[in-house]
Image (cartoon, rainbow, N blue to C red; front, side):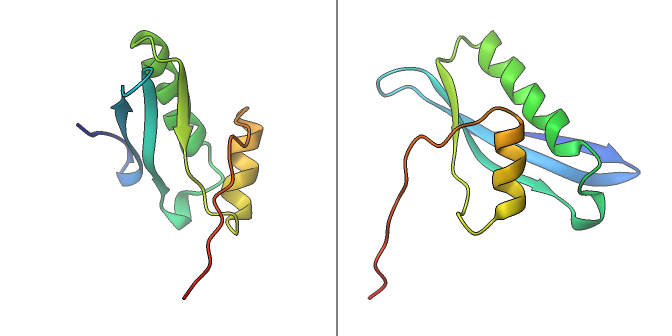
Length: 95
């Protein structure tokens, strides 16, 4: 199950999709957060992530989880600003 929230300011400019992982505990998993380039740094991501937090609380989730590419400095900074912390690091070796 995946749900999408979108913000519209004349046209759709930001969206977040999420689902619940209930294997061991109930976790709201953010699949994707997208803000159009021209709409960045205007608070849309914060609005959507605040709504995600509200939904997670209403649904009695234990936490919110998401992945972010390590090279995406702007996104990493934004998530840290919103209170998210690093839970784990995934390493890879390309073959």
